[in-house]
Amino acid sequence: MTRSGEQTAVPYALGADEGQALWYMGTLLKVRATGAETGGKYSLVEELCPRGFATPWHVQGREDESFLVFDGEATFFVGDQVIKATAGSFVFLPQGIPHAFRIDSETAHLFNLITPAGFEDFFFDLSVPAQDLVLPPPPDSPPDFGAIAAAAARYKCEILGPPPGVE
Image 1: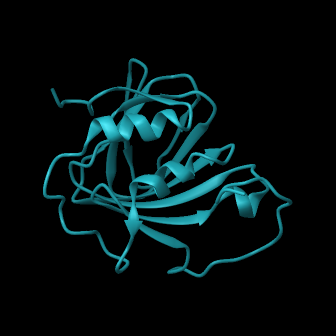
Image 2 (image 1 turned 90 degrees about the vertical axis):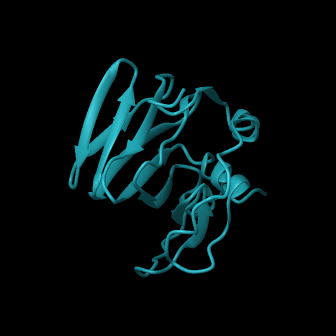
């Protein structure tokens, strides 16, 4: 069974500093729920991102993503829409619509609900365990979009191009 393999969901709880902590492309992720805990229904990933972090343009073939901006500011690019999100904002990204986001504040704290579960394994594939619950040191080189695209393809996600504003 994979980390997000389907099984019957059972009640569980995590404290504020609990969850699988990962360093992912200059961000700190805390995986709060995987498909293993939710019976495959959803995953929940808490994200702490620095200014300038941006996802590539991509489209997911099976998952919807919902973001709650807990703190900070981000710009979401969804199809031809540009959505400015601040603390308390909620953004829904339906499957099949190209999207990306960029962090505009010093840091942003987001919760990413992914339905159904499974795409959280993409983060596990491209991350290392966090050494502490802080942002990792800045990367020494730009992300390898080829490696990102290959990992994304395993989860029916297509990378369409670089992050918004990056040529």
